[in-house]
Amino acid sequence: MSITTKRGDRGFTDLLFGGKVSKGDPQIEALGAVDELNANLGIARVLLDGEIARAIDQIQEWLVTLMGELAMPFGKEIEYEKAGFGRISITEIQWLEDWSASIEKEEKFKGWLRPGERGGELSARIHLARTVARRAERRSWDVVDEVASAEVRIFLNRLSDALWLLASASEKLRA
Image (tube, rainbow, N blue to C red):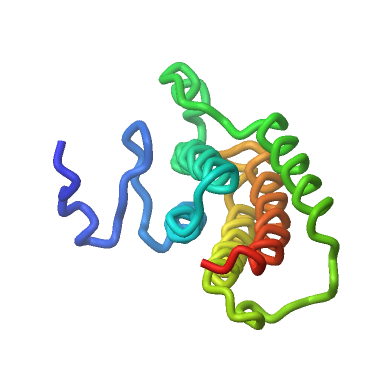
């Protein structure tokens, strides 16, 4: 199957299992925000190495899972699960909470900074990802009850918190 289907030329896009919606549909808005978040995290990840790069890579993997959940048409939950697609669960949320706590141990809150205030490109890029995570969370409120688990919203909320902490901590790393 080719990535170029031309079906989008008329303003519609495909969901999983044969669903089709307008490109302006709230479900697509949520998917697009998560996709943009994943791309922004990719930029931050290539500026890093070691444990933090591995953590971002793991988060990106979970975002792909989350996008699958958001791409599921209403009423196709059983088909989705039978196909072996994963879901975001309390396990991933707990991992984010633990990761945030570990960052916060090292980086005490010292007040709000404007993104880029200290001149670190890495921090500014992580802040950009954080704001996209917040938008993805807001967009998910329009569709989660219909197509995805509530854990999607919680995951995005915890992720944006973790990214705020990481952006602050990364000022020391200076990419």
